[in-house]
Length: 450
Ligand code: PEP
Ligand code: MN
Image (tube, rainbow, N blue to C red):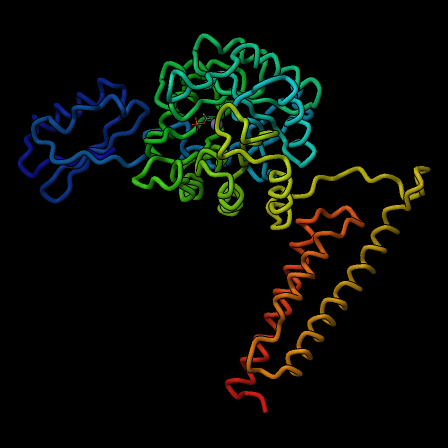
């Protein structure tokens, strides 16, 4: 902190400022500039120097370092890795530093042991590394589903037992720290409680990591100060979670502030997770914004998944169903944002189940893909020939024939693809053929061809 004295400040004014600083066990370095005195202040208790600017002869007080000492990257250059789960640390999931992107998934609210276990098994199978489910739901309306409370904590502990997934849930009451510690791997502070300093200090006493959501009306600095409450109370395992802020926009539930991710990187050493479910409030926006969050450097993603979103007791609109979550995880892997887990491969010798070894099956797939490529190109070639025969006055394709083909594709029940999937595949082939026809027609009609 720098205190700039006014040009008219007296020696007495300067001495008063120096004394104020020393009273707080801080150090003051006085330097005499051209006609002006500047005092540098160093120490931890800068926050207590609230009234310096009102002292006689003080022109300006300038903050140089960040007010969140433990959270800031200024004094802690190495990024923090938070380990979640794994009592011994051996099978703990690392979040932060240079570790793999961690996907945390689960239902907004825990509705029954069965739905929790089904969801856990599914998200684990798809590559999620931790399970999150709400037991205490702080809802805007007192009449909305409030969660099953302690009973749901038992369900989480039981599900961890059965799947090995670390479990996370939101804590709303400082008196619950002990029971959360004994049942869970991570304590979540929800957006509505980010300013609850009593709760922040309480989870500072926990031996579990804390997932600290951004208050929906909080600035980055207020959020980092909230983290500082947890760190300064003794718990340095904090993961920050961007979950959207309230803006003038009403088309989405919140405005997901993805610029916060790279910005936080320059301000704090703590890991950062993005929650596109609450950030958008809409199922179809969750995947794209999660990909974007991963692309801007999030250490993890928090995704709401429900076995049957239309019947969910909370946040159904923003929850992915099982196939949607699977497709999303594939997309993450396809974009190299998520590494494939090392899957133990079954041995290549025929395993006695009558199925050919994987290498052989893959060779067959490659052959069949090669055939498909040639067939699709050959089909497009034929479509061009039809157009040449017809001339370029009308469009080359016959809408009735296309409709018939789609109907045939949908009615084909000879393999595992559903009617809808067959329609999608043939629809794409036809669209591409038509695009080739259009390109040729355009070349001819505008005379670039002979
Ligand atoms: C939740 O995670 O289900 C939740 C209530 O989120 P937020 O605190 O971000 O609103
Ligand atoms: Mn929710």
